Image (cartoon, rainbow, N blue to C red):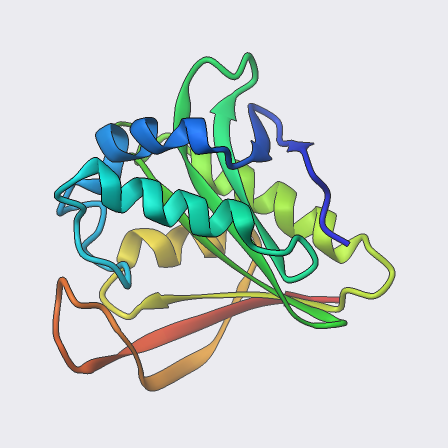
Length: 176
């Protein structure tokens, strides 16, 4: 079962809300550098971001949750962490972080806490995530958060800002 809220050392992870759409749009959704290795194109209109947020908010919590990453006082929005239940013993994560927060340890802090929290649950035995093989920053975050690179998923997913063809991805996991 995924918690509604949780805290890392320096951040609060709270449920994504419709009020976050403007923060996301202005914070990173339009940024081509942030979206380079995502499965979505940079947003051109706030309505695209609102549609995305509405879909996340309306998703049933038992299938997964999307969390807003904020400072401990919840005054500074920094990005999102999504955790999806794949089966009773396995969860996957994905994340995005606004560029001003890159290189500051934000996502390592958040991911390390999320992985520990998920693996502390009785039924969770595997936490995993992927990144494009060219996304050195994301690979480094997962390594620093304690995940192990298990291999390469060949021609696994399309990152439309890089190519219209499926690209190779690294898969990282932590298990108990």
